Length: 102
Image (cartoon, rainbow, N blue to C red):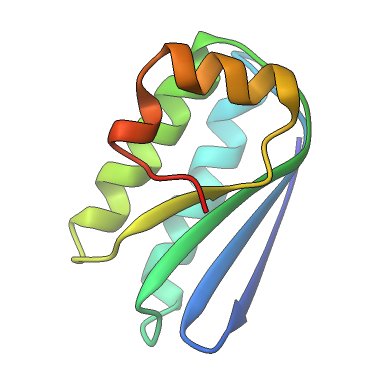
């Protein structure tokens, strides 16, 4: 899993590339959670899933955890560009009721 961050206009874009599962989620989590402390001028975060090839239930836990991490700072979180399979998992899991899709 590759993680890249980009800040534009007060928005922190988090780009995930690869498989989001039990083997990759911990490293991605640590990287993103440490970034929350560095980006002090953002007013929201968008997690871009366009390059996530596979996601299992660990990925759902990962997303909920990042939501909670950003919410501690009062920042809303959104999901962008999930592929068809990922979108279906998130829809069935009710994740969009917590983290809206943009």
